[in-house]
Amino acid sequence: MNAKLPTTMDALVWTAPSRMEIQEAAVPAPGAGEVLVEVAAVGICGSELSGYLGQNSLRVPPLIMGHEFSGHVVQVGDGVLMAPGKLVTVNPLISCGDCSMCAAGLPNLCQRRRIIGAHCAGGFARYVVVPAAQCWPLPEGTTDIAGALVEPLACAVRAVRHAQAQPADPLLILGAGTIGLFCLAVARAEGVRNIVISDRVEGRLRIAHAWGATATVDGSAADAREQLRTSLSGGAACVIDAVGSNATRALALNLVRPGGRVIYIGLHDESSPLAANYLVRQEIAIQGSFSYTTADFGWAIDLLQRAIITPGAAWIEERALAEGAAAFAGLIDGTISTPKIILRPAKC
Image (cartoon, rainbow, N blue to C red; front, side, top):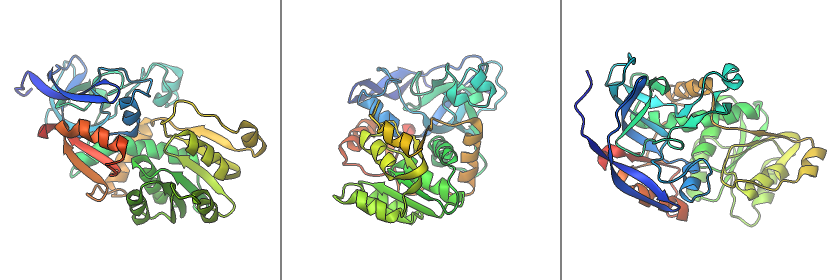
């Protein structure tokens, strides 16, 4: 039976570049094939930071962002057999299911794809309506925070698959934010033994070291490039750029060995000039990595079940939804260096 719910809720709304505010919004009602989820935990993604600044073409204000979230199903629409009360994680990538890409098992490349929190209201609110098909019941014992980590972990799973790194291959990861750290964890779980990671935040490098990085390099150091070269004798077999700035995209090409692979997953700058003649002459393979497939998403849940990644206060900070605007501002100006901020809408 569907629960008795309030008619209004608090939502964190992006209203203009660099501006977010708590607003009162109507609690949405699920339609046929949909469910209403009471959001328990929702992460702030790096792509949302660029969206917040007005630099991401997918997002148009006013918008309730939030695509990394878990919560409890509290109402179901017509035709939905799912029982209310179940803790679920939500796959925010909605594909058409009919095109050639979907038929090939690549819903992330569907040209009619939509993303919850980008094309429609997301999880920065007490309640959100999502298609029932996008809800993945979480295994018994899985926490709501772990559920909110499934989506970014699935992104890392796909990037590491594209990297095709062998156990002895030197792998370089640029950026030790959530995605970079998750790529480190996934690569180690796949048996890659030599992983170098670079970031400009000392605390994030300490986390990377604790997670098993072979070497860490402060990207802000004057000799950072030389340190990376020393750590990657002969160059990296593969580089995963989890930042996506002009500088890191160029650095990735500079540090990969001839015949190596560069995986671009970061989305910071919309476009970047690349040394095209150099990559041709060195036969460097460039691979974009966007989102994930259904298999990647399922693998991410499995990795969390196996405790490949364990949520903890060393790298996760929980805040009430009402603190969301301040969290975005702090992540942008660098006063917050914690890799992952989790917002709690129930504490707003």
